[in-house]
Length: 415
Image 1 (cartoon, rainbow, N blue to C red):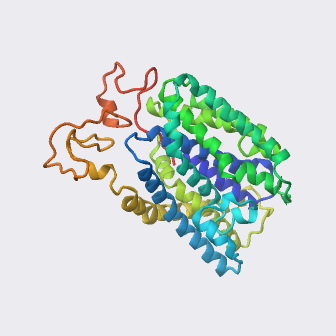
Image 2 (cartoon, rainbow, N blue to C red):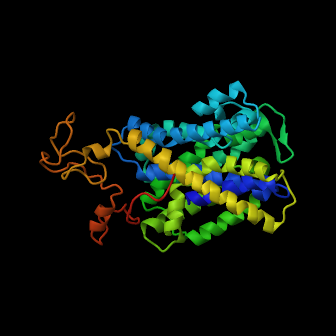
């Protein structure tokens, strides 16, 4: 799912170099970003461990996001200097610290690294996650659907709030027929986009509790296509409001299909691999497209036919995937190994520990490292949360699965 959302954003940005830029192409990027936000909240909640501290969670997310962001932002800045594009000093610090989405102004939110404004939103989501997950875990199951409905309703009101209460700005461009302040509030403002992330969190609890209706992935996908078609020409509603419900349906239907091990093309090894490098692909694709088109002499909104579009997009996409793989292997994975797991579950693994969370045996001193040779006693953890081996050992009667729901085979693929 992550790769499909990333590919939608890639196609949206490539459309700047083909004939016209209709709502169809522009909305692809908006749907892809909204999909990422809802999926991020769902996956993090699904895979969250009660034993993980807020500090450990923040460290792991920072290790995943910041090194790759800084490397790609520096590379993009270098390309700007080499090609004679100006870098405004006021753009550097907000971009480097991922705070640019809090400041109104399209030129600032998309400066230097144009796609990193979504990371600015994600970092705010991660900061709020420990507090949100605590409250969502405390909710009674009967209230979850009501909370999800309220979140969707508030998302639908954001364009109205922007239109009537946000100070008027200036038109962005003929291609983006919005006032810049209105678009910032609905699309870039992290507090507004937090609603989609929170919706994903609530949906994860609904699925885990076995309260999700039997909606298959195919009908959910059809509803997403219909919602996407209806979102064209809806102005500010096209950013998230028009498609957030079908996006939620697709994510939940895919999660249920995954834990029940239903046949799905999304489990193909190539798609799994592309999903693993999708974050890096999201970071590198924009400079590949922009500077690749510049190198080939392709202007914005060229009159290329379909054959020419495919002939240009295919090598650009290939280069972007190769660079994404390199960034994933050389930066993202080493950073997560070095900073993301320090003092984490791997440090406490031993023969008596929980295979999922690495909890110590009962009575083992909290301040001492655990050695497999010296560990005695049995692990006191009863979480079972997400352990594939634990699920496989479960009896057919349903031990280890959410009440009334599918067996948990582990977190679905996510960001």
